[in-house]
Length: 76
Ligand SMILES: [Zn+2]
Ligand SMILES: [Zn+2]
Image (cartoon, rainbow, N blue to C red):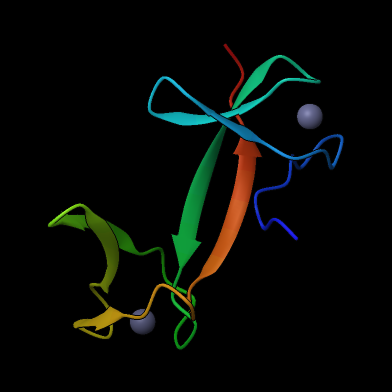
């Protein structure tokens, strides 16, 4: 089961041009991560090819498996 689901049509998102894309809606979708502890928006850090998330509020790294991800359609 995929976690990358379009917020509009709930179909699975594909990866295109460095971002998520819904083939069905033909729209770009961005993923925003929120802290599981304080609900602040997390900063995405790219390290050694794998992404990790940092919370400026908690001042610590958050495990990717714990972050709350929200998908939003990008209006061009
Ligand atoms: Zn869609
Ligand atoms: Zn936090």
